[in-house]
Image (cartoon, rainbow, N blue to C red; front, side):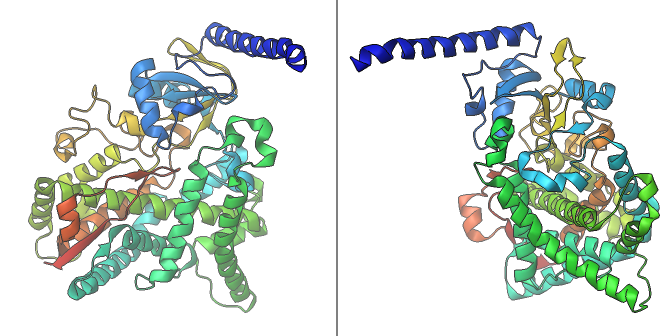
Length: 500
């Protein structure tokens, strides 16, 4: 009896769901969205993402095209996978897509974060301070001696490990070098040391987990109605990780404030400038500095600045170790240009075209942020004959663009020579290679990152010969990626150095 009563209701529910599903498909077609996979009821195309979304989306684009739409949960997402589509979005319609689609897990941090703030007067004011006072060419030129010192400390540390016969964790030493370079620039002291395996490793682990957590597919982003529940706990996890970094930064700020109160001489570093701003120096420009803004500034600078550069150095080293011919070419160029001189100057980089080609090829194959940071459509816009609706989320799959066979012959192979007779650059003008983004939201730290990557890589190769541990040579290098906001090597590269 009960079954007979329930059966009509079950049939009605099933038919209603099917009807809603068909209406959604019809509405999708009528809206003029770019092509994409047919969504399932409720979840849309979430089941197609997997744990390597950059690869999954690249495969889907081969079927549905370089401008592709997906319904991920209840959110319309548009994925760009070609240089032509990227140029349309990031150059011709940059203003319409200049705001961010902020992951729910980032939470309160986004209120003061240059990478995550919407395109607004506040964002412009904060970015202007960063660009003018930290990454401007004259500022970077003035700190060449500091970078030379940090790189020499790295070489000395690797030399000690070489004499002991110990393997070098390339990612860790590159991370620590970048971290201390930033900390000396910003607070005039090292946050850790290359010999302090515990301190630097812990800081790196926190930053790495922040990047992984922020990049983890989150139900709160796909079903905003569920966001308040934070079902996966990612917002709580990220808040705890941010708090760990904030404790470190608060100690430094409090120390500097005490020095100011006791009349200690000014350091005239970036922290002094920001503390001046908290007293009103930049408030009229819309920056509105306070302690929370300082914390977010430091989190962005120390986190992204150290993580992306060290990851690029690690990927470059592993590709060179797997491709001995390229390693030999680069080392021969260093000998020819630098000679017996131990220290490489930044002015030498312009005379090292093969070094520059190696870095470009590394960024092509292993862009630090494979999907860039997601953008948000401020208004309904027509792109390449399709409609991108207001509120849609946009992803630029630069990982897939770096493997586009229409642009790159033998795209899966590491071939730095492809850049020797090419004018293609990665600074936002050549849309086939935009690892740092393009347009208004291009990475502001790119000028420092590129100097450091070239300098660190050249110094490691000019002063040492490198080989893989015997076990790795027998079994092959594990090239597995760990997806997050940044694309890390899942297993750290440890290599054996021999002084030259």
